[in-house]
Image (cartoon, rainbow, N blue to C red; front, side, top):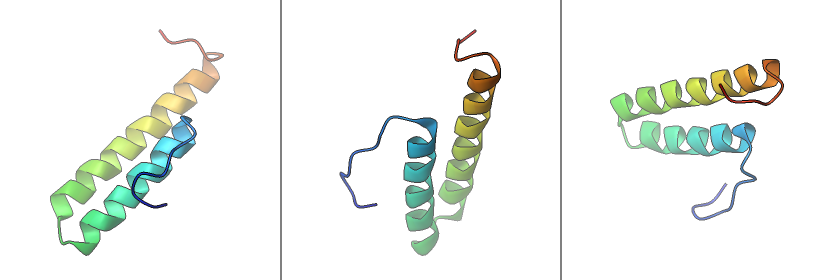
Amino acid sequence: MKMGESQDGTPEGLAEAITHLQQQAERQGCHLTSRLLSAAKDAVRWEARQLEYSGGERR
């Protein structure tokens, strides 16, 4: 993925974008930023699972 490339708006697309940012942070030695991005990616995936289990309705 390149900077400025559009995402599809799905949780998977967001997780992919976060992964890209996380890899950039690692290459630049920003380990705390990388950990924070990893937590954000986990939160996105968790929320996607919750939406899937609830039939797509937010609580």
